[in-house]
Image (cartoon, rainbow over all chains, first blue to last red; front, side):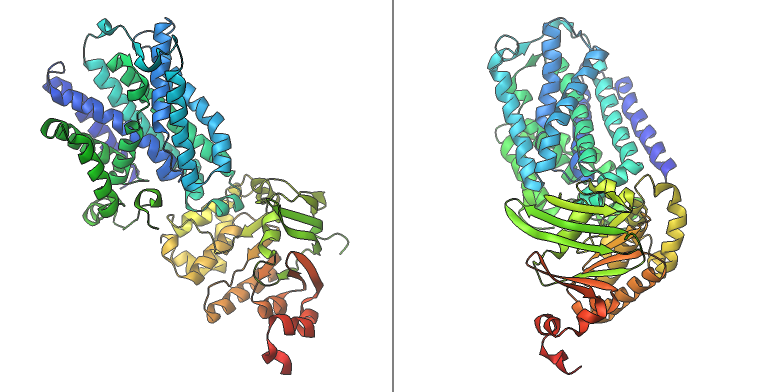
Length: 330
Length: 243
């Protein structure tokens, strides 16, 4: 696709989604809630896509930044520093995880590679979850914090902010990977030694991608905090906030811009449907889907023959090695 | 020549507690081809990794263009003009050939000259130009090696370091690779070559160094080493005795 077509497609899809509340009653329609969740997952998937799909650093710490972003809002609101839908508060809920990503990312990314880095980030989420459980009155312990839910008036702002986050994450990822910075990220992904030998400061670019990804995840956390009004460690530091976006990326197509979007919408639909139709076995169903995806579709929907023929005209493969999940070399 | 382009003295490198190089010293004159030879695990690649800033030497001096550069990061080294073609080529396999080449000119010094350097590289490797939109990982080994060399040249190196460019290539392609090295040298690129293909590496070299388990065992002119009975016995087998 040409650049103009890509931008046109983005504007068209965004406009279509923006028009949905005109047709459906946002307060009653289940579809508005569904799209709200799908948009959040698009943003989270793009965050993982940037770090893993384009930079090759498989992170299992998305939920750490997501939860931290949520707690920034919860604590800030409780201390009356941040208000309801406070733009500054939301930016702060992105910035603090980004700063954490830099502080943690420098030692993690310089010392750990591949699966070891993944395990390191997994540890980060666990540490944060325990820290917030032990946080006393400030974090509300394992019961978490309750926010004034009477502030809720309408679903519309949630819908549009989620749509904005999805578009924001997609556009930021797109702009980053299209620039010379994106070349550096892809070079680090394909061969770290060669990237360094070509004069790319690999640590700098890895940390940068990690921090931008954390910023996006933190923003998603803050919106989810405003929506649920009850922030507790088991939910917000739950591993699902990492595993679902990974699955969405892989199913849609890692290392592509459209892949995470398609994967997030498709899988949110599947998960919501299975919640309604198979309420008891929903987690089993999600797990099964993960297994099936990595076995049969590791390159993603966007790399299916007919899809590529239609949009790109050439065959590509998933650029990252999913050995961690599949157990086999690419 | 009064001052060599690169002078290495008393270089010691460790991987953790294990010492990989002991007091390595040599110099490379501008415009020369210098070969480092030796068997598996002798430390040849480690010398290049230390010179390109991928590993930090524990001690020793590295002088490049008269100033000390040891311990600097890889990105600084490339910007100074030391470029490495890594072992196993290290292409960015998911990117196209052209993108690989353009990434070679990533440093501040090389970026403004990118278009012009690309013309030069295309002239050197017409095959690459014909395949510029192909995914680099899908090319044959010989073509990949050419892209890897081309990419290293894109940074406008004053010293081009090649780590086993003949590795895993068919004999005919190996010959082509050495012809390329010779052509590059004729175009005033100084070359530091690491090879297990000892015969070819010595034939092309002005001077060479023989490494064995991290220590220098011999240095000298390429043709002298080639004729040396010790070298012949140790590295080339007895078939060469008659020649």
